Image (cartoon, rainbow, N blue to C red; front, side, top):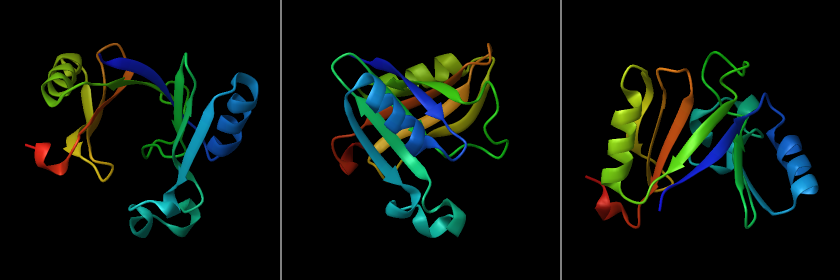
Length: 142
């Protein structure tokens, strides 16, 4: 079953915000800095301590976040995305194509270093969507 989770973008204070949410809401918090990721060598020094990905989970919700955003920076409207976590490759490709009609594909679906098929877009209503299908093995990529 596919799920939709919130994905929050921060202006350099993701660690502080996600820690605050954990203190308020409980759950298990995991964070990865840019400098701890395979992207580290491609990013400027000032980005190394920024949070690439954070995830706060409990039984009832998942909140994800990052300090990374596009060249426009964090502005009202682009700081929240809906992350559609899909069950299979066909589903993620179908949802991506259907939701992109009349909108803007900002990042095509592609295989990532975290072994997922991932992409994002802004739909025709201005809603930001992220798509993820976590692959079992590298052999599944077509």
